[in-house]
Length: 237
Image (cartoon, rainbow, N blue to C red; front, side, top):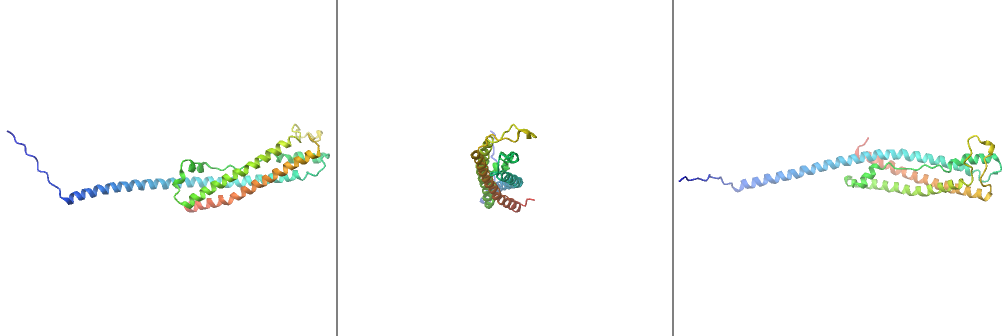
């Protein structure tokens, strides 16, 4: 009968078990730290990417703010020219001609639209969580709040521009063609009270246009300050 002998298994002592346990612990710990480091690097890269893109959008906003302010300041000058005719004799064809010329500023408007592609990403995809510097996150949120306030100021600006434009259709003949001086620039309604109502509408439009300009100007420092802050904190050229 064949007899099988079991191989001798070397028994491990306590120190060897302890060493193996320690090696396993170190391997798991190093893996955890490596994964954590990778996530931190990814988040930091994502933060820099968002901030760089936001800074570019803010630069575009800065240019647009200046353009819209200039546009509306020109509109104010045009409305002032029209308002200077408020007490003029509209029986005089020269005054009616000027009224037609300056009325082109009544229906014209220019509004600011923020380049908010990056801002929308930050808000909609919880991107603000990537911005670890609290003062930066606060400044970005503050700028967004200011822009939303500007959009609110746009509402009466549009409304009273629309009101004045609608009233203008009751005063001027829009079928006149360029060079059609023979018709003497007629008015649809020559009633003095109606004319006064028309100029009242223009005065109100002017007031809300000026209010809109002030709101635009108030946002410029927020824009400039945030651009400077982002470039300094993230070393953006």
